[in-house]
Amino acid sequence: MVRFLGPAAATAAAATVLFAGYFPASVSAATLNNHARDLFDASLSWQDQFWDERAGYLVTADLTLPGRWDTRQTAWYSVGLLHRNKGSDAARARRIINNIIDRQYTVPGNAWYGTYQQSPEEPLPGSPQYAASIYNSYDPNWRDFISTAWILAIEEYSSLLGADLVSKMVASLKTSALGALTRVGQDGDNLLLTYTNPELMRTMDVAWLGYRLNDANFTNFAEARAQAHYDIFTYNGFDTFPEYNVPTYVGIDLFALALWDKYTPKTSNLHKYAGNVAGPWDRTYGMDMTQYQSIAGLWIWAAIGRELAPNPASPALAWHVADFGFGHLVALTSPTVLPYFSSTALSRFTAYPGGESTATRHIRSSPSNTTYRTSTMWMNATVAIGGQQVDEIYGFRSKYAYNPAVILFQASPSAPTVSWLTFWAENTARINATASARVLDVVFPGPQPTNTFKWLLGGLPIDQGRSNVTSLEGVPGLPMRVETEGGVQLQSVYYDLDVVVHQFHSYTFVYQAPEGYQGDIRFKFSLL
Image 1 (cartoon, rainbow, N blue to C red):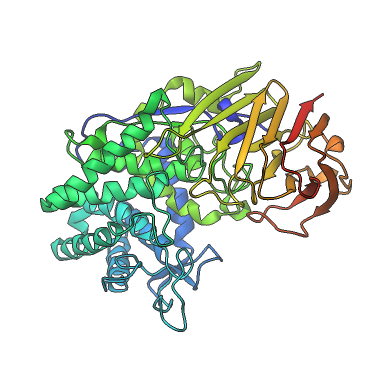
Image 2: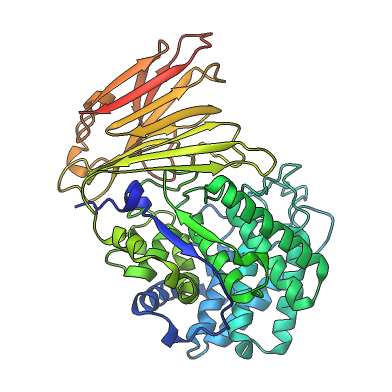
């Protein structure tokens, strides 16, 4: 049976993490609880099978990368090797780190300065053969994904690295930070304060270097940025980050906050945080965390064990599986984070408390004005409804990842997975989606930039596979009434002819408003 957990179904149980104080460095096997140790072993042994001894890198588990080997996964792997430290582990880790640093982009004056190759055979970005394209021919966020991991390595395992390699790593991290400081959210770069996960990592990286090198330029930048994060988080009592309820990247947020808490002075602005996970999704790589690998699921594993945590049954069954390689970093930082998970939050991961639940959260969208989004949720034991109200061009919103209006449901008592109905936010800029008891009410205020509105339906049980779905009022396991306003009509229904979103297959229901219509469009889904 599918278990819906916490205040927003299988992907989001409420977990409050408070960060305060300064913890001395040391992560021994004895400090990991049994669940974290199990996660560490499972994640690192999974990465072991991708090791290519001749190349000195891991073969990629992410087929979207521009090459056979994966630099980021290999950098993460190096930290796990240092902790395990059996046989040739430490020597392999040192080889990896040297390989990656030697291929860092070190020429100033371009957007990829300081970041690392995505794959060692990748050509130089900006060349005639390999045009510069952010998140394609180079990924500026990889500065921070690699730097945060190596900060953990330096703090915990410097004796295994040796003084010379530590110095080389610090120099590399400084180059990475100098490149990261050139990112101001302009000229095609989207790194603003509202892009939470790389922003938190960048602030941590720069702060750590500033204190280690006694560099006031780094320290002052990081302290100002930390204060800005705190201000936007705590604005009006909202207690939410702008990149809200992202099952993958909330796990990165926790990792960055754990490093801040443990490896920066207790007087720093970095020690003001309370982080929260709840609500519908600003970004997601799937609808059911038991079908794709999220980093939030790894944190839950470290807290309560693999049997109860919402993860795929094994990496072999997971989409977005490369993030399983982050599991050992979660395990190694779990002693800092897990003491601040409340018992109430953890109980939501183990059993639904019964009855109905509701939640409303507000998320500030910009540090320069008071614009905010409102997320609402209603759920019972077998259905979860979530909606978001947004009146803005959302900075990092992706039509593949943004889910402002969604219904999760258990299509049959024996269904092993979560079924889902979600709005595909291709072109719409303004949405007023509200969840209430058994109702998802979605208004698109006019005028909209499009007169086409698409809803995606997927995750239906295997035994429903031969039953073609032709209407949203005929969804197996989800009896409901669908009402529309604004003259919108269902034009077509098709299965996977348009796009496969994050490798998940779905029906697409295409609704059309009258040509030239400028008024509001409304969909109201009422569960029967």
